[in-house]
Image 1 (cartoon, helix red, strand yellow):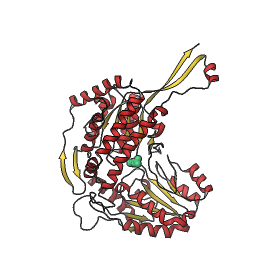
Image 2: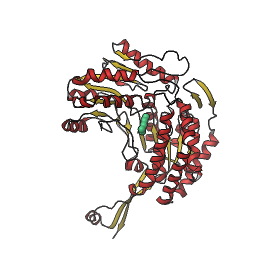
Image 3: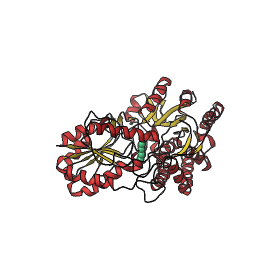
Image 4: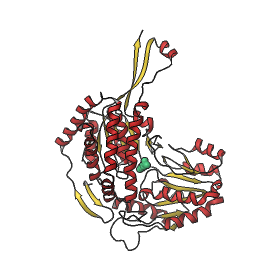
Amino acid sequence: MPIATVNPATGETVRTFEPLGADGIEERVARADRTFRSYRATDFASRAALLASTADLLDKEREDIARTMTLEMGKTLASARAEAAKCAKAMRWYAANGERLLADEHPADADVQDSGAHRALVRYRPLGVVLAVMPWNFPLWQVVRFAAPALMAGNTGLLKHASNVPQTALYLGGLFHRAGFPEGCFQTLLIGSGAVESVLRDPRVAAATLTGSEGAGRSIASVAGDEIKPTVLELGGSDPFVVMPSAAGELDHAVATAVTARVQNNGQSCIAAKRFIVHEDVYDAFTQRFARAMEALVVGDPMEESTDVGPLSTEQGRADLEELVDDALARGAQALCGARRPEGRTAGWFYTPTVLAGVTPEMRIHREEAFGPVATVYRVRDLDAAVEVANDSPFGLSSNVWTRDEDEQRRFAADLAAGGVYFNGMTASHPAFPFGGVKRSGYGRELSGHGIRAFCNVTTLWYGR
Ligand SMILES: O=CCCCC(=O)O
């Protein structure tokens, strides 16, 4: 895939970029390594001040970078602005909490004595240069969610961003340095995916983090495994959104949340709710309202404030989504709305919000991730069936459950195979909460204390008597 900005709302190639050659890559890897040797010794207060200045700079430049994101990958301008604001918030959160999260740990005195020491403690030291391979769907947030904790912990970062968001990648490559970080702390490598393996194998690179497809995760994990380097993988998701009868009194709220949860980011989010699993007592009422609300969404130019759903980010992405829908329809699913391109739009990669009922396990969409504004609805007879359908997926990123019944909440909290269970709301990441999944959604956690410790050398310091 060429490195280029292609406007998904028009299909027009706006700008192309030459990938870095071997010398350019070497220069940046060497700089990252050199910078790590001095940066690792800086104290938390100075790193926090640098992160806070980066947040201020990003706030000032929010409108410009939001427009760049919308141009490059088609998210609505309102959501691009919100993404930039969220990045600044996460930077400030790690600036305020990083030192506490990485404070030395002191084992119990009895255990220290028992080990033969007069003193022992656990210290979180930085690991080194971390390679981040990041996707286009939240082109700023996915990167900042890695970079803010990694820099706060004393690491340095190299970014290999998706090939369709080069201007956002270059912006990020300059942002941290312009805010005061030493130049080698965070750099963008404008490279194609073929060049990633040699960077990851470079002995100066200590670890990697990837957010992206299962295939990309598998290839990073296998190279990193071969090199014995730690990785965090955040891959796909097909999150369930369960609606139980106790939500009957707040169905309008549940429906509005379901729509947002499905079409956020034009439907292209790993944590978007994709499978709507509805108890038979509320199935008809929920499903009719849900399909009507999906149908009423405004599909159009993402730069327009009135647009709810912009284009898919790539032509291939729309083709993949269409194949999933067509396969389901051919095998007997019913389209309650959508299942087509919008009329009158010949340019750009638009697709109308779609609700499919009657989905069965033979259909590809039952097992694969629908990365666009397409929802599937399932009718279930009771709580056991809801849990079973929710867990009948290769993915296990997050989940959403609408129920006010505390016994039911306990059961879902215990039995849903996912990295998160969100009750009476929708999954949304927050700097204070761990983010990540199980099964084919990946492993490791980003954000919170778990995210900042992921790229630390957890060191035992033991002092003999
Ligand atoms: O594709 C993954 C989306 C993550 C969005 C978020 O962290 O809010």
